Image 1: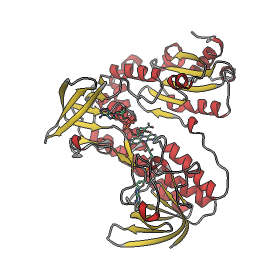
Image 2 (image 1 turned 60 degrees about the vertical axis):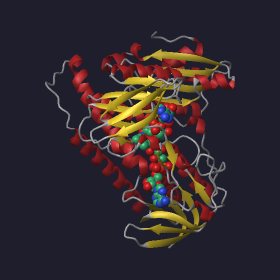
Image 3 (image 1 turned 45 degrees about the vertical axis):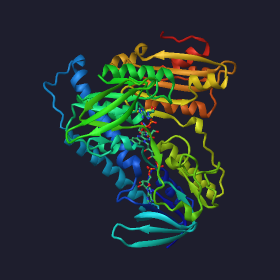
Image 4 (image 1 turned 180 degrees about the vertical axis):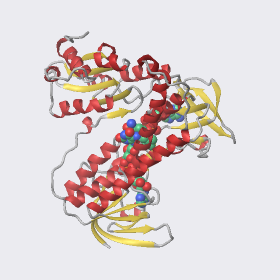
Length: 467
Ligand code: FAD
Ligand code: NAI
């Protein structure tokens, strides 16, 4: 088996890279160790978590919000096992879609664990114990990431769980402790909080979603507290002890010796993910890693070995599906002699809680640190006609623009539909629009996007219309 390009890993980085390689005329193979394609994102990440977020939000709205709309539904019941079945159906539709795309693009799919024999030879250990080898001119490593779980947390996959197991609980738990107030902890924590679980989040830092703009952390925290979630900010977990029926979590105040214990049915560990290169035999190909275990790449996403590239969660940068996809296309086009470009500053970040949070570009803190003069325009959702009509009044849109040139430097939104609305901000910033450019664009009424226009008016020269 001889290929121009062999891609290792079929997540959003790998499968998109393979499709673009095939489009560009390369004879392409993809190797995936699991039976289904799509990687973390489709199997145990983006897609299943969003399916459960949508289902649980329907339940929560029926239980809490329908009445205000004049709809009574009587007594409500959650069939979590059925919710999980639906989630599995959604996953299956998506992963079979990727198999279809591989066939359509004439990409050879090999299932089995890939490891380098040398820079141009890859061995595939198949499930039936057999081994195959492929010869390849170039390689794209897209092996993704796995959850970080310290030994002291006694990860047993039953009571001490990561996102993977949290997507398959079939009975609504009474109590859940979540370690980490980042994206996974808050998305999956809110799934269970909506279904009635008492959720307590232990976060080491002084705010949740600490990589996003400070105002977003504050707004989201307020909404999640309304949902009933409890937070221990500035705390860390020392140990987690599972038993047959539950867990005991020893928590310590970050800046003192004071400790206390939380008891729960489950402890969800969501403290970040590590690049995954286990058993890949990088040493045999001579590929180097950095001090954080990520594959070291240059500005072309090429490793120190010519012809071997790496993309997605296994290299530096945000661990996001759309970042991995952009890098997949970038590498394929680079190999074809094109000159692609990725602006990493314009990769949006989204948290799919309700309200949603979305941001792109610089945060207020980053601009301060960099000494960039800026002005701020904010607009609250509660002043939007559309938000009042739907009852989604929590949230705000915020635009940061350069003080002298008015160029938009960052957009941060908390509120209904923020995940979809951030695309406008990305487009504006890709074309280096000013806040005034945005303020002069017609935004359909009544929509949530009017919050962006109003924030732009506020940033331009403090002239929002509806505030
Ligand atoms: P992965 O998707 O991890 O794929 C890597 C693939 O490589 C895997 O299938 C693995 O089995 C395979 N592999 C590894 N080693 C080998 C080997 N030696 N041989 C063969 N195959 C191998 N991101 C978003 O942008 N939006 C979201 O809403 C979102 N939600 C998420 C929710 C959860 C619960 C989690 C855990 C993650 C979420 N992410 C989200 C992050 C997103 O899933 C990752 O950023 C993305 O999947 C990374 O893509 P990748 O191609 O680099 O790697
Ligand atoms: P994260 O990096 O988003 O959050 C981890 C949090 O845990 C941080 O706030 C950190 O301060 C805290 N923490 C670390 N160690 C701790 C300790 N010992 N005790 C208490 N708190 C501790 O990581 P998370 O949530 O695990 O997600 C991993 C990756 O998956 C993220 O980088 C994200 O990019 C991706 N993802 C993206 C989603 C999206 O785009 N909507 C959804 C889910 C995951």
